[in-house]
Image (cartoon, rainbow, N blue to C red; front, side, top):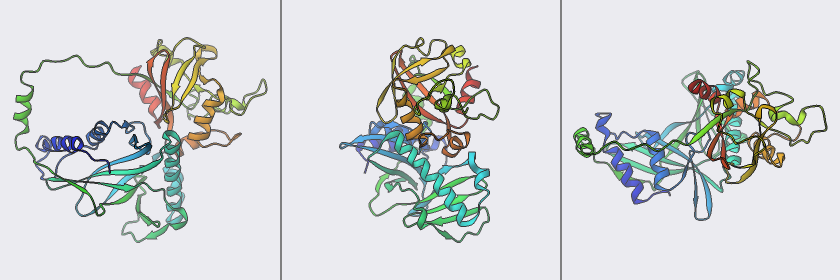
Length: 371
């Protein structure tokens, strides 16, 4: 289990400030704060805002762990908690009902887990849970299982909007109107218990703590841009059939099945003219599993992000992440199904960049915020 004294100390400290937010005897602990505390305590990579099925990636004991982090209130020794949302494909899922719907939701869930595995290449995956009770926390871990499709059995439900089912290991609940899948987490036999002392007047303590402090300059944020995996030329945000992710299908000359590029819209260059290096300047592009590709910006108007060899990008993006076969088209439907349609590029310097996926709508939000 991931647990150490520093982890317990930081959890105790944050929960002691419960009266800043609530009069409850149950410690207040934001899931975002809990994620940050975990990653800081164990020097793990924080993936919580990277729109992956995993919230953290940690190298430990010669292995790579993909970790889902959960923080929730517990009334007994188990709790039903959200594990996935399928808003982008909700209309498609509403074409089904009963066991067929349970299977379709399970298939979508499993494919997202496979995408995360291909992204971050873990040896083991697990859930790390922080259960909140009256003046205490219960720390435990749970297996991170795909749904066993052939073992799906329906459970009784007292609501037509809730679909309950189980497989050979876990119990699930799908909220049809919210397009949200839940899983029941069980505490198990050996949780680590942390007693919490809730301070009655944290405001006074904070005031005394910061009384003599002066403002310090803030660290400069990492530079980044977000790029679409679809064509911005079309209002329906389709993936073009003969360019971008499907460049291998373009005419004019014989094409390799691995020929692909990520579009860089002109507005990105206009808003951030110095983000990318000059055309055809080679730089390192680190992918989430730790490997590094050789990349460059090329084509007219520097509209394409490509790798050398170009097949390196197609192997990572088309084969591992989108899980497409050679000759299979990347489509809008596939992006919606997997829950992402953009990538984020972080810049360390002109020779070193990194890339990861971003959730549906991230590119439009990024442009709107910066335009």
